[in-house]
Image 1 (cartoon, rainbow, N blue to C red):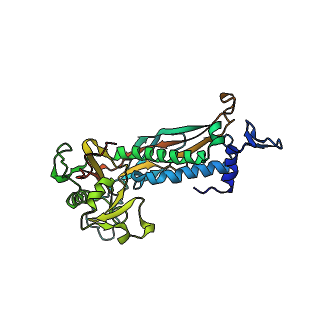
Image 2 (cartoon, rainbow, N blue to C red):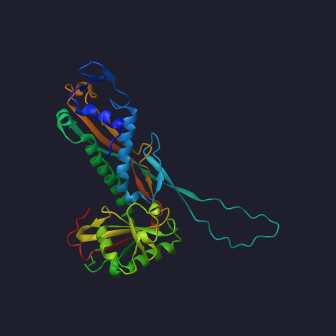
Image 3 (cartoon, rainbow, N blue to C red):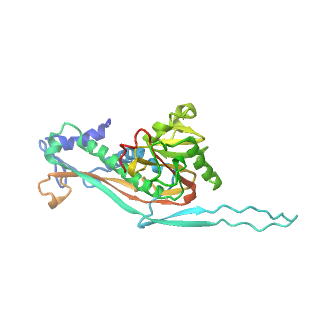
Length: 341
């Protein structure tokens, strides 16, 4: 990552022997001048914002399972979130009488409530490490924490989605245990999933239904002669994060975090518009917390420890379960070595 001038000035506080961090600010050993800390336990508001944005930007690519959700902001002071869903209007089969205004229909809206939980983790950086390390340990820690946060939050959503009960087993098998190595994801399976969504009058996401699959599943599927690579039908600006191509009218997003069950069974998710909802990671959903040496007071009397971490409020909920179909299949090449996740 390329750091800007403000970053470099801030990071010198960690690396330079000329500057010493105390409880009031950063002291220059030569001049004795003390630069007071800003907002955020010794971290300026600008740097707090910078690192928070850095964490979010680097976590987002891991959130494949959040891509197609209704996203709701975190309610202040609340632990539950209400997702709204609207019932379709019934057909109007009664003829209209000339000159008579018919009764208006009312929107039928219901709510699905989900409890939001808090997740987070942090790493400690010692004063010795800060002063002697060649690499920028703060940025290294942020990279690792960003990946951890993204994968954690993505898995929370993934597990909810894979809890749906609309399941198709490849090879026309009746259960997960009946799947064999040759029961790979096929175009016929995809068409069955699309049929199930269409029979529910589910709306497409944009111009197509979307599926989330594992690279091991994609390895088999992309060998089909009907497979279209994403660059052949879509401009880069319109690609979904992780999109690799389409077949049978379904656009496919690939992620290593797609569900793998025991015995190398893969869960591929076929989604329609409005199937599920999640909490947003911006606006307080995902936060970075940086504590400099000296910010802990008597809890760190020798100013030996700094820390950097993240915390997030997260929940996911199926809103219209019939708008999601899971296809379970094997990979002829990789099921033997695929570990459950």
